Image 1 (cartoon, rainbow, N blue to C red):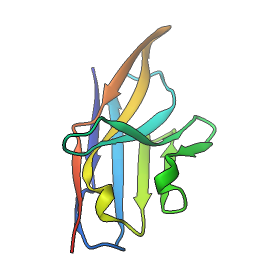
Image 2 (image 1 turned 30 degrees about the vertical axis):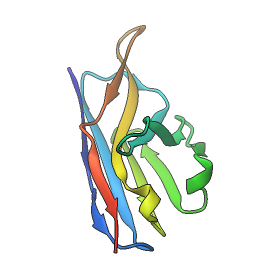
Image 3 (image 1 turned 180 degrees about the vertical axis):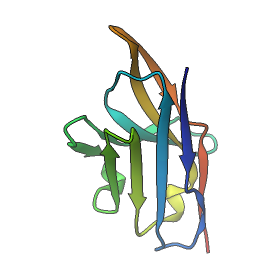
Image 4 (image 1 turned 135 degrees about the vertical axis):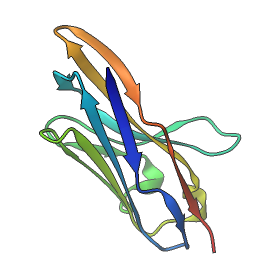
Length: 120
């Protein structure tokens, strides 16, 4: 079994910062591209940022220059540093990791979700 545990959400004023963390545990051989998604009320889940095993990131246009994704392959973690937060960043944030749990067998795992609220 594989578990992803998220931490770091909360309430912050516009312009503030938060750091989200996600740690994987369990039977893991390899982890593919790690990602952070978000879902606001009444909207579809969207990919905010992703990072490959080599550390190359990719970002949603609206967060470029404000968010930074990083990963530690040895610790099996992915973080999302969010700066200059805006009210439109308010959403539930989910980490995602495709995991090779036995040779040649992969499964897509999700964190439990953490609420980020940006409000004055």
